[in-house]
Length: 320
Ligand code: CDV
Image: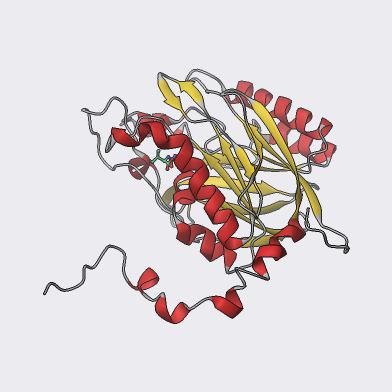
């Protein structure tokens, strides 16, 4: 693969793509599906298994709900909880780590309540590595009844207060991002500047994009485009895992993929249902890119990148 003689750091990584989760499907039933994928992954020698965004419930931002108790029923107040504990127990027994996306409700000591779109990363010994909270919250804040379905993430979630961390875990440097985060080059670069070698991502991407339906047929292309370029430009593995298929009448992209630091797709899902994909990832392969064409210390020109953090929107050059 790289032609080098020195020993490699291999990690066998799995993507546990999910098919639709109906609104009526219980958490217990979903956890059974996750357990089935976990056991398949263990049989395949997987050491780290990645589940999608909001992997315990249906993608509820497609509805404008107003009853706060009903809204909060989609969130987890503890992780693990009695319902998710069997997943943690089985993973530890099998010696397999995992990343799981879920809606998280946090109550501060002063009683302030936060709603996040989160992903927990758990090591092979069952210890919690980190909880990542989605940074880029897409969609809209208020009900827009003219749409065929809503994308009310900005009504249901607040952005992460923490940003993009990178953690020493699984023998490498691991980061996380959630769905819309994967479309932004800054996401990858902030982790790339922390030496990231493996980025884990879950997503729910409906084919229909109301603000510009012309993009609908390009959903699959754009999905791989951003993750492949992010992997290559930062010399990192990227694992993108979908909840796909027709869920409550909304058709969503599947095409989960494990992408190498070269930008090449090493494994890709073939169905729109529960499906395991696996790749044996050489974490040292990252250095072929990090030490050459993307040797940041040698070649980056941050003195010209100030606008990236100094402004949010576009400032046009003066006319004339
Ligand atoms: N769950 C998501 O973040 N979905 C978004 C929207 C825009 C479809 C996405 O970027 O895929």
